[in-house]
Length: 184
Length: 373
Image 1 (cartoon, rainbow over the protein chains, first blue to last red):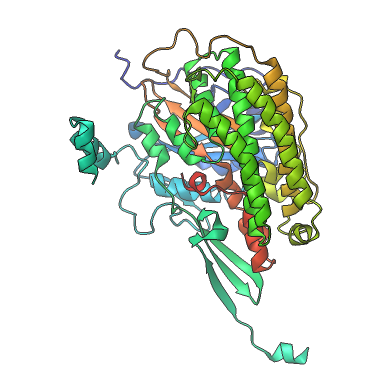
Image 2: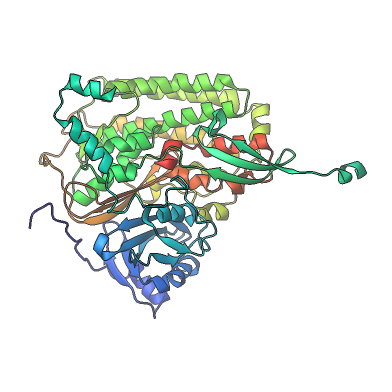
């Protein structure tokens, strides 16, 4: 296999008695796919279970994830879009990563703004950048992008940096003096 | 009183920014005011959006360092530090001892420089203290001089590399840093004497923009804004990264969560940063490698992902880095602290006067390039 070919991350089982087991204990009838990431446990949940899992994560005293650190979208092209939640507990000093996968054609998932107010702008950003739709978000309008830029979603892998690549190609063969002329 | 009741009052929308000295950059907020009181606030961000995340996905791991400087242009070393640590975590690189000390010294000095900028700009927001601005900038300039000597640049350093730093520091580095520590102690007490017990300053900041610790956590606030609410939390202590577990320092907290407490917390953080630098410069080895011996020419990270976080002057700076093998990040998300802190602006400002809204915005200490990325 050539090194340029995309690889998949190795699946490492989570350590016993960790956060993954706590989640299984709190939510016995929910399915998790748990792996150990570079720094914390990664749990993949179903879209339908998301709100229930998140509510339990915040409210259950064993988990007590009161702090949503970060919410990001990732485009995995054929494997769909992923929304990643990074959680932290100030009381237990443990952290966890929750993931949800949706497909590009049906990129709807429940909003967690009712659980953490801090999810508001993160979700708006993920929505405009990836074309996700967060159901139940109070104000899902573009945040960083112009209001009229609804035709494409810049962080998806199918919107390349076409113009910049072209511009670099044009200047690639030029010497330093000639490049300065193009700039003017 | 009867007359007042008969008068009809109207809510007026006041637009502040995007080009306005009080907004610290290109930021717009629409204030709905009833007389002088703010009843609603709508922030508008995105004017500085340059797609740093998308651009980083299209260049290799080392090239993307430059975008960290351009994102967080007041605490560049801290931002670079978080990014290179994320890459090191994925690539499994060991950082030599000496490079760790150089990084920590520069990052902590950068924290002091950033807080000087905050104090200067914050006092100017309050309207009367041009002196604080010049004091802050004078002290910051000494630190900038060292950074310029080390990196060759005043603003966009690009000095940290995955695995270490790109070249060694100048020979007189330790003496320069020791001198800076002494100078900073004087500089901090100068500003302290100018502002902390100033009656006008206290009157303008005490009790303004207070937020409770529960609310602050719910909004995802971090850094000095959160510590001002009484939360004793600091990533350098809670999840020690780099070599921060070797230093002795205190975590200052406030108890009212208002703008004055945020100012006090930052002032104390500067003193603690000086303490860290003083310890680091004593422990730092005099010579040794600054990059790992076996560093590949093209840096490739094995597939995987990491969310690296670091305590930046403004709060928790996070880098969510996904790799699918290869020499480019597959996805790079920057969790910028002032972006998250700015979300709570409405919560803090509603019910206060328009002039206080400007003070509250200043107390969050936003960097708009980092908000919009």
